[in-house]
Image (cartoon, rainbow, N blue to C red):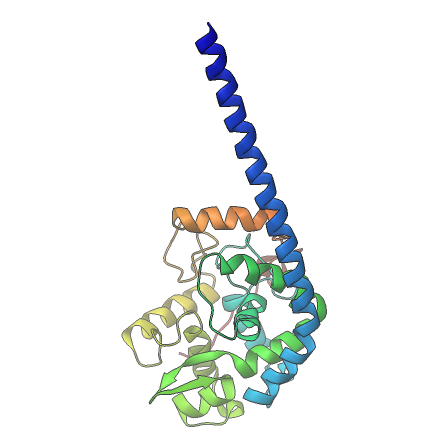
Length: 266
C-alpha cells in the first residue's frame, strides 16, 4: 500500500515537473519570437530598400498582363492577394507563400535552413513583412529578387535577369510560354531549368492545371502529381504553424477565377 502511494506521488511529481518544463519552454519561446518579430518589423523598410539596391527594381507588377499575373499567382501562391503572408489551407499552395519566400531572402542573410527556421520565417512573414509591405510592393520585390538558378557559376536573380540568361531577351519580349517557363522553375530553379526533362514534364503538368484538367490533391501537391500528404515531420510542423498563425486566407483562387482558363502558347 505504502509502495503504491509513493509510486503514485512520484508519477504525479514527474507529470507536474514535465508540465512546468513545457510551460517554461513555451513562455521562453513566445518571448524570444516576440522580440524577434519586433526586431524584424524595425528592420523591414531598410531590408526592402537594400534588396532593390542590390538586385535592381526594373520590373513592376504593371509589367505583367492580367493573364500573366493570374498565371504566376495561380501556380506560385494562389491566395497571395488575400492571405496574411501564410497559407496552409489551399491545395497546391505548398508550405511557402510568395511572402515567406521573400522572408528567406530578406531576413536570413546567412542562408535559410529548413526545420525550426520555418517557424521564424512564418511568423515574420505574417507579423512583419505582410503587415508592413503592400501586396503590390511584395510582388515587385518578387519579380526583381527571386532566385532563378545558377548559370556558369553566377546566380540569376529576378525575371529580367532570367529572361536575358535563358532566352536572350528583354522581359517585355518574352512570349507567354517563355514567361511560364520561368515561373515553372521557381520551386527548384536548378532542378527545373528550361530544356531539361524535369522542366518539360513540369510544364506539361502546369498546362494541364491551368486548363482545369487536373487539381492539386493536397496543400503539398505543388508538382500536381497527386501527392496526398507530407512526411511526419512536415505534417507536425504544419500543425504547429496552424496553431501560431492565421493560416486560412480569406478567399481562394478557385473562387476568384472559377471559370478562368489559361492558354499560354505551347
